[in-house]
Image (tube, rainbow, N blue to C red; front, side):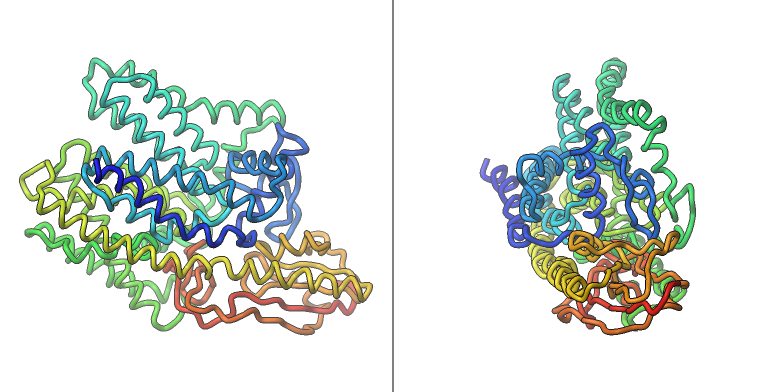
Length: 551
């Protein structure tokens, strides 16, 4: 009983660092979800019936965002109740982090019985905590799908229909929070087919029907109000499987291994106890080979990077590969029975989606991989060769490793949370001041770039430059960021402007999470294969141009 209480309490304790960044500024894709939330309050049945200038030109929000409106509806409800500040919005999303931790603890009781640390190891990771500090959809989707799997498993094991129906419905709700949650749906069906007697299959498949209900309702709304389905339109993502662009499967594969190790942390430490017999040494040898391959390709795939990045890529890719290959080895050897096979396929489906379909790999995209991977690695360490059940010595070894990983992960997250918040916090402070100066001089202000600069600039009265409909005139001022996405100045405008000044923010104290040319790509592997990297840049900055004449 004591271990069960600790197994629930410690993951919740790992969430405490989030309380210190509740007032972090809006940044990254937060802007898209807040725009949809504002539209929901105007047209509740048409959350994307507005426009946004996200890539440098004005387009329907329908096409700019590739996620369903589950989180925007939640934020709209919070705003309707008076929650109009960053602190209120982050508080409103905190329950999803709590729900994820509780669902993880529930799954651990089934797949890692007696473990105190297996859930803490991934909850304390930067992949989870940094993602949970944003207004983005990754942690809410994880909460729904983890609870869905947990209840479905309990319903199948105990032959209880209520938990199965609830589990299927919660997984379906995860799909209308983030479309990629659909990748978890086969796990429910697979568990039923592998763990339940054949005579129950028909009833179990019938109980899985609520999976489709939320997406069906959302799609029906689309067809009635817009005559098309957002779920289908969202399949076309620049750089993704149906619209291949920059990047490659190899690039995403290397980034996935690096981010699994560094943003997950516990896979990185797993190698200490990995060798066990010939198969274990074979896994290490293959992992080392993959690390060497990764370092040989880094210069070609990411030509602009810090000189030390390739070595770190080699090490982290090898560590990530070691963890993933060990999980695969567990499934092949079938130690732990069919439960192990289900967990391994769960990991494989999530990894396959990130590498083969997604337009990029981000540390937050690694999130769905981490819970089943942690359970698999615990089972690998806890069960000696030739046994399916955990042995006391093996379980103790697994707990020591995962406990150490949780402590290291929590320390890394405590450092990275303020580092990730710093760019947005700088723009929240600086952009309104610049906007007031422009207004005081009687000029018009224009914006380049997305993310926090766009959000706080538009709130202060600045207008995003539309490269397809330039409306600037002589005397206007253009404001741009150092790093934020989609910041390129149209060539026609560039010929008509003169650079005036720039205002660097404070220097990053220890880490950067996303910056092209540094190796850090927490939010997109196109910026770099590592989730974070050492800081020798300002956290952000602002550049100012004066328009000399019409473009």
